[in-house]
Image (tube, rainbow, N blue to C red; front, side, top):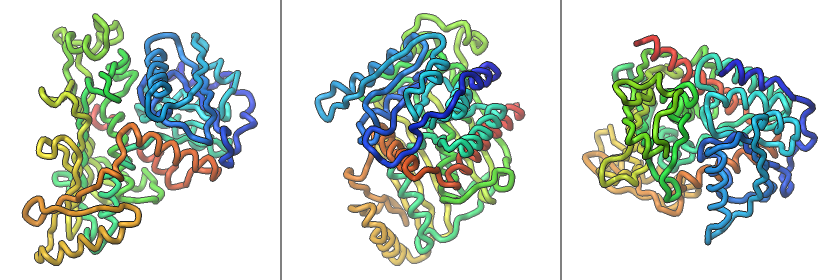
Length: 460
């Protein structure tokens, strides 16, 4: 598959589009949507942007994926409150990629779908001089990572930008955790930890069956194939690795050969029997390409994994767990996240379990002897960031522990965060470049996930 994708990427490159310089002019960004197989492709268009032309050209093979994408866009266009006005111009055919490159009706392509094809799609766009805004992951193994790394280098030489959609950076609890870690009077120095007791732990729990925008999410069949979707340690873990990088080396360039060292990794499967597969896919039987993963009439999906590594000397553990659905009575529960960053004066933690009503909540755990003095320091720290994060407060939640009370007015939903990332990307387009630290951290992020997969597979 990879060889085929790389071969496609080399065809029909032609000259770069002439409208590839941006200054913020209304409608100057002309979106292309390529082979949308994941609902994230639609979330980029949940709102309108002055800089983005409402006409979007979609290129995809015929089938359920493109139909579901267009249905989601139609929901946004027809909603009662703040409806969008997207005009989707659709081409479906076996030559959809060649057609997109040949017609060049846009200057930014949005990618969210089959991860096995994504590296080749990124390369094809860059070779054609088209900017890329891609869902994660952009590479699902070390072979694809090497192609991606070279493609990112080529993009800079061609004057186009490759950027991935890191929505978890701007989830308010994640953002405030980094902010508080960055206040030495409160947090102290980051601990180094050990492989057994890491200084940073991040765990993400997800569900194959869940609701998005109030509707049950239908998963495409390829989503369950690790050769197309990729394994858990290279998919959702991308977000966790990104958050670690932003915490340990904020806005700094990372050399993965110098700064990253693996200590261990592991992987395991989620078992999905046929009745549950029917529920989430809408299909009656497993497709032929999944038969390799069926054991005792049950689909085994290697969607779970754990990576243990050092980043700039700091011991880190990131793990991802995929259950089929949330516990009975909590079916509407979204993805959950646990995180702790350990400092010499305090630990900063995010919890999202039953006690929190499955909503993420931020906590500060004091390590100092004088609890009253520490509380005063905590209040002072929150006051120092009040201009950017108004309304923050604290509530005692345990012995030497406080919850950071976050007002709803500064919380963004999962769907809304896609719009925020889009605005960051549009600003980078106007600036004419992605910052060097962003580029280096993009490379190191995919090195970490794909190398971690290699280590996990070797451990079996």
